[in-house]
Length: 73
Image 1 (spheres, rainbow, N blue to C red):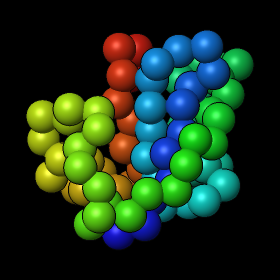
Image 2 (cartoon, rainbow, N blue to C red):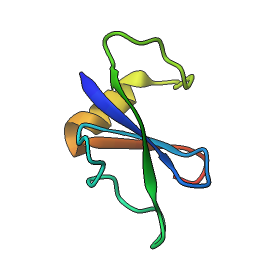
Image 3 (spheres, rainbow, N blue to C red):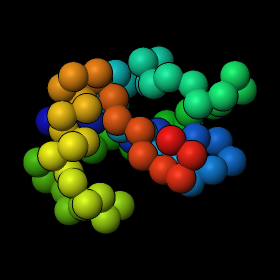
Image 4 (cartoon, one colour):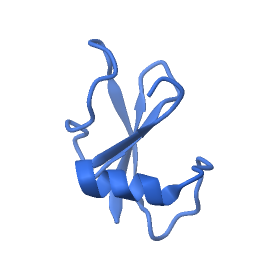
């Protein structure tokens, strides 16, 4: 599955989305800015973020088109 990785400006919070523009990622605050990091093929990468449950990420992507993970999310 091709996904797009975004980082919330001034934080370490990350989001993956199926939308290359990232417009479907909801704002955490009214001034949230999501910055594009890279495109990833989930079938070809090791788990770089040490996500405990990669299946949960896939479920979020299928259900909502995005998944946010980080301290504030």
